[in-house]
Image 1 (cartoon, helix red, strand yellow):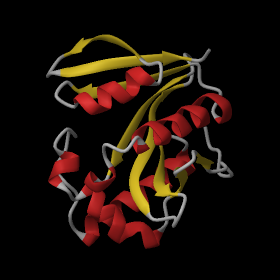
Image 2: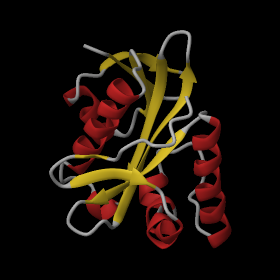
Image 3: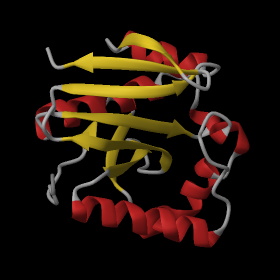
Image 4: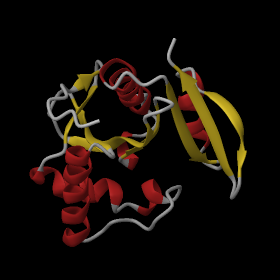
Length: 170
């Protein structure tokens, strides 16, 4: 799964591009915000060391082909407003899981829909995956709604109040 030359993907207002070292401050604004991270499985990432680890882990994952993380940026100014990822690859079944987060100020504007649409395009067209999965905290109703609007079907309730969604390539 090592694809070092992935082209960025974009919608009308947001694009996915490689994470860069100069994204660290904006990344901290997203991943360090308890309002953004309240549905995640770990605490907010708040320190410079946390951001350095996150950026290093993204690069290591890309090089190893185990997971991919992108910056979600506004097309108008290239400022990071979130992250998007592919992880949990299962090569034999051609499937992976997706993840995404948007800055609190960027939520509720349809930007998550655009970012996830770009992520789905990368997953199906560039990685040639057949199935995408998403596991969402059941209380995160906005994220669940984004997935349903984009053709993900709810599969079941997972343990720990999580909802599972699946989308197959059409």
